[in-house]
Length: 510
Image (tube, rainbow, N blue to C red; front, side, top):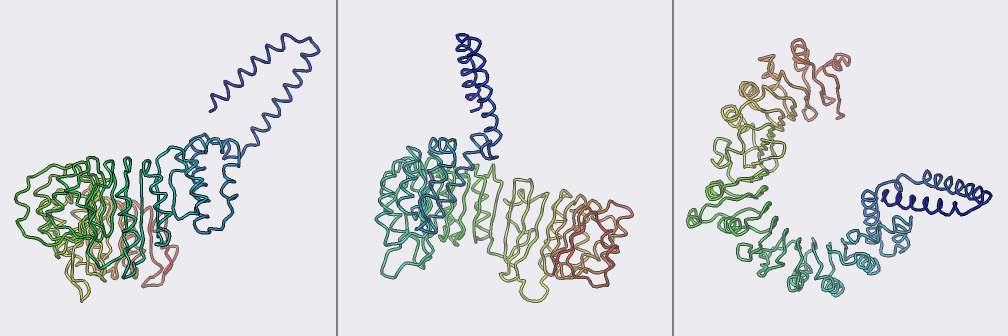
């Protein structure tokens, strides 16, 4: 835009010079005075521009879109909001108005719960641009206007999102189901994203048995089942299906049929099936990057990695039903969890779950959740896990997070820290008892010698012995950069002594 303005000014300057050659000396002097006044006025106006007004076009468009969405939401929450609040945005300045009305994508996302006047304005300003229509919490009494807009925009719909968490009446078909059945009967040549989240129901999932759109890329369903192994999409890249339990064979068939898939999430997991129902399927190579499956059995994991060669898997999330240990992890998982640079050991005592999160690369995360008996006594769950990690992992760990109510014995903890944490820089520890940790690090002052950040904000009480260990450590190794402690101490605190433990000390309130 700046180049166009400069070209226009140069042209005006040339025209003025041409005209000045035809004037007498008196006229030329008057003209020069007039030009000087115009230049001064232009300079003052330029300096008077607001910071937003000085932004380049592409940044101003982002600000404009944010404002449009914000005012549109006012209409959604207050149907009586005056229209002038909405139209005021494009009348802020001629430049805003020109940019906003020239770019149809600014108006391409429309919430059908807005007032009709707002929807119609968005449709007008969107021009011929593709549209994404949203229907959060649709109402049965307004089906006719919903279907009117869906049909009117069908040929340029790039996305449709329908969701509701209100249970249907016993004698009525759910509103999401009715809208979904209407949508899939339309001709949708450019639909790339389809989201249908059904009202919670105890009924069996509703099956969508026909192709939604040949151009579909992203499919998100809850309470609906779509046999993508039978209904083929050449370019489908993302599938997320909730509240539907799959069979193992259905999962394998889905991967066989959809070779372009990059993301697959089945949050309700797999049901147990015959152990040999997969034998007739050929092994395939798949470049899916994100795979998340809810409750499934260890055998399902074995079969999955036996039948599929995952060449590009960077994010994995499994919830394995059996209470297995790291030593028993399916062989197919071992390459993904070996030699991590970041490790999280977490437990959920209310659900009897333990979670291990391995990170072998800043953009590669593998999470395994399993059952464990945590609710009674002092279960010996983490001791065997730490022992196995000490045998199978190298010392590449740079970040470690431990959120365990009862820590394992000090000897096991010391072995793990010595073999896996010789390069550790960041440690987050949340526990109800510090004694095993303090006893472990006290056995060798060289343990955690590379540590830079220590976060103990989630621990119950800080013993005096821990402070003494930090003071002794500082005599041989660099002082901690950051130390986070809870305001709970088992001794009379000497604050200057405490603040000398790290370059930056943070005391969290109780």
